[in-house]
Length: 255
Ligand code: PGA
Image (cartoon, rainbow, N blue to C red; front, side, top):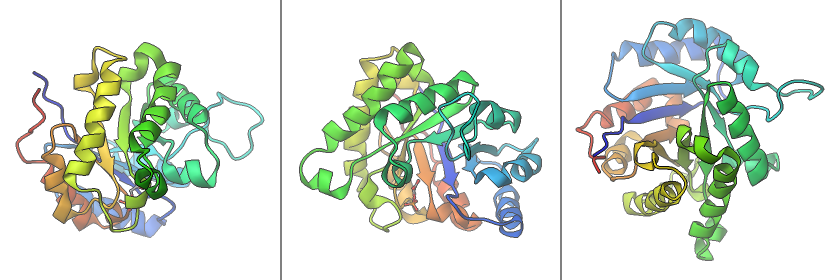
């Protein structure tokens, strides 16, 4: 029987300023502790100030991407070693926006996950199908393909990642997957991980895509959904805190 802790991660994307970041963090910290683990993934230039503000608090911080390379002539890239210096706990890799707008392949995403993990940072590996793929009945095949690149690259270390299932059609659209749709894919992800590692039951699987205070609890009640990767709602302290509070309910994830 495994009790997984819930994890709620805010993905600020390319939003923020000194002032709005400070206000947002005050709002989150002012709400007091909750039983779920909470983190914010912020744009690179703000890592430093966010790290200073969150030091000594229960709220963790992370980045939204990371280079697959260790160092060198890679203009514009940021390495896992650099992120580690800022005390990053997490790095999102393979977000669908990076896959779609920056041409990131399954293998590049896997290499990024490996680079991140190599520096002791937890990669939050995003997988998910587009609307066209879902309608063509390819959801399972797409998610499996995206995840298998990571499993093959990390081998036994794959138990140390967090997986975020984010159906592309649900991101920023207000059209969230139903709890049943999300759970169905989460169960497939966990089964795929189970075939690769004896620790699959301990792994954290997040759902992402239009998570809001009013749909969070139903998602978190699903047996294989261990929290959320939150975009739009993570920019409003009250909404983000309400989502984290929805994870305060007694943990259903016993297996
Ligand atoms: P959303 O974004 O919550 O705004 O849909 C989620 C994400 O892209 O991680």
